[in-house]
Image (cartoon, rainbow over all chains, first blue to last red):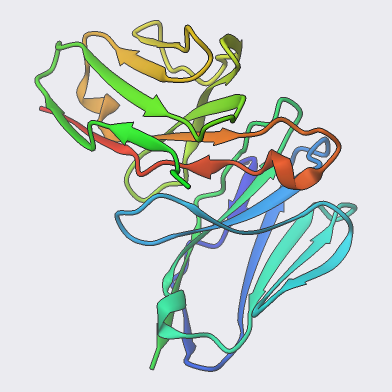
Length: 110
Length: 118
């Protein structure tokens, strides 16, 4: 079992719809959880982070965390073609290192 | 302000050659991380520095991989006797240490060095 699991996709959503991305993790010691976006051929860029159970909203993005279920998700509202990218889930463990999932590829179709 | 920079951006090596990859972190960032990203996969942790101290090198795949940060700023990842399986993008990230604010644990990534071993 991988430490961080994500559906590889592609997740195809029409423009303007909500994209829902899921991530499960195995390390119960993880404290903070990061979502990065990675365009093809580029390096990861931070979308947002969450460390408390519940929801956290930032613009069109909402992160949800449930530590008991070891589950974190990202919602992208009003999806735009520019949101087409791979989204990486990364729990942060003691020592600050990030453990990345394989990423979910999102395709937003006009 | 300037972000994390890495050089070279692309490196082609013949199998058996040694390579050195450089990372310049964001000014003032104490923590520096190296990750390896194979095609179609997420980044995998290699090693972590806090200032000049290498606190975690558990992700280095073999003793052919060596990293240093002698003055606590610029870091070099060296790969000796490169093999084809070393072909990947090598990402460097930096962050401020947590001072009680979670936001300062955020890692900011450089553009990466794409290494191709022939």
